[in-house]
Length: 281
Image (cartoon, rainbow, N blue to C red; front, side):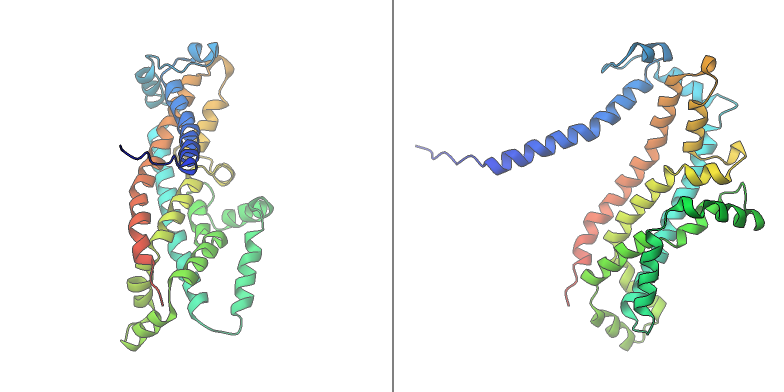
């Protein structure tokens, strides 16, 4: 007779919880896609879990709207989000490397100062920031949304913590003995080790910049320079008689596609970089 294996209750509970969480995460995306296939009149009737036949109609309504530059808005968001992700992760990693590797008198003071900036809300400095960029001639441009991403205390702290757990100082000393310069050491040795941390933070920064509404609403005036959240807000705030909820859902559906692509592209670096980042001293 075959022996029956004991039921692993812990495994069953874990899989059940994971299935429920996966359902909750995907359910909202499913409803978003379903709503993008429905007309404004159908959406006013209430909830439906079945798709309708107005997907192409809603898409063409958004794409052909002369007062609504959808493709330009997506391009603006891609430029801003990509630049922010690249600049923020690189310079945050570089700052974390400097504070982790070098020993100097004001090291602890610099670290404390950066952590103090972390708790300062963006809204507090909004008026001063607006006056500054106006005087510098950067009002109604994409630069005010890109340049400040160089200094990100939250990303810096994540990078610093990752270096503490993954980068042995002996590796840096060995590179110096072999004649490697500081920037070459950072770019050729440290950055590959930090791939998992960089990939994770690049996703977060990209999504945060893509969904950012406050700063673009503060500094952008021209419609051809607006990002996706601003354009969606203009759709939502349109005249009630001309308001089309199907168009809004379609724009949101189109807007999340680049985020999904970026995540799928960077997620492989998270997995592949775990072994590379597991350097032991």
